[in-house]
Each structure stands twice: as structure tokens, then as C-alpha cells.
Length: 216
Image 1 (cartoon, one colour):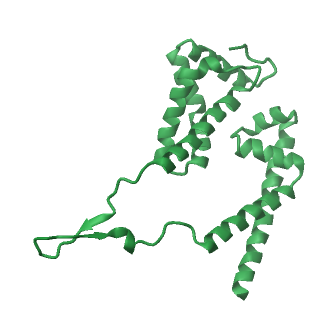
Image 2 (cartoon, helix red, strand yellow):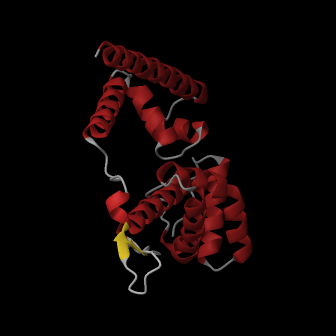
Image 3 (cartoon, helix red, strand yellow):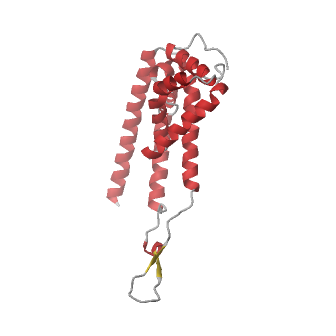
């Protein structure tokens, strides 16, 4: 555990102090840390795990982890919110992996009520459509991913970097400005123009796809 960087914003220094006190078992500091960061960390989790109920459970796991691991925060390696965001993102990804690995617990068989003493069963899966994506679904998903990548590449390097920090790492505009060593107004402009360019590019791509489907 190290002292906060004096060049950090006031909020970053405050979060670093709260983490330091949390590492010493200070419950009031931990509660203050929760109030200061829970909304933003919940947004990070929800962008990965879209099930709100599960996201709320993951957020509680995140803060349990923070309570246990606060002493591992090193101010020489990362800013407090960057470190907290990384914990939240990793826990959210783990939650998706756990969910994918959970075995099905619902019986696929249902008893037949045909009035006979012998009874019987039918396989419910025989009457269910496959949950797997079909060829057209996979094609659409691949096309959307390709278009997003193409549209991102059309942005300037500054726009891509600022959008990545703001929307993938969950940083505020002020923290993005600090990370990039740029004025706040400049960063806000990059984010605003980058989003607008990205939206216009994706809208044009969607229009072309719709036109091609209509011609089939």
C-alpha cells in the first residue's frame, strides 16, 4: 500500500485514502467507499452482465472482494477507480462464466396423464425449438461486430482512446482527461464527436444492410 499521488484529482486522492483505511479494517471508510463508487461500479457490471438481479449480486461480491483485497491496492500502479473498475469487470466476467457452467436442473421429461395405471413420460426437448443461434443469426452478429470494428477504425486515435477509457473502463470525463493528460474540454469534445461519428457510421451500415435484405 502506498501514498496517493499528489498529482491526482481530489476524488482520486479521497478514494485512495478510503482504500487505505479500509485495508486497516475501518468499516466507516468502507461504507464511504461504497457510497462513493457503487453506482459507477454497478454500471460497469451491468454492461457485462445484463441481468439486473445478477448484476446486483455481483456488485455485492465485488465489495466483499474490495474489503478483503484493499491492502493490495498500489497507488504506484493504478488510480483507485481504475483498480476498482478492474475488480468489478473481472468479477462480472466470472459471473458469466459461472452461469454458463451451471448444469440444467429442470427435468426434460413430463409424466403423461392418459388415465392409465402404467403412466408414461414424454421428452419435452423434442417439442422445443433449438436455443442455438441459426446461420442467419450468426451472420448478423458477425456483420455487426465487423461494422463496429470498421467504424471504430474510422475514428481518430484520440477519439478511440477516450471512448475506450470512458465506456470500457468506466472512467469519468475528468479521469479520462487526467489519464490522457489533456484538458477536460478537449476530452469531452473527443467523446462527443467520437460517439456521433460512430452512431452515423453504424446507422449508414444498418441502412445498407436493410436495403440489401429488401432487394432479396
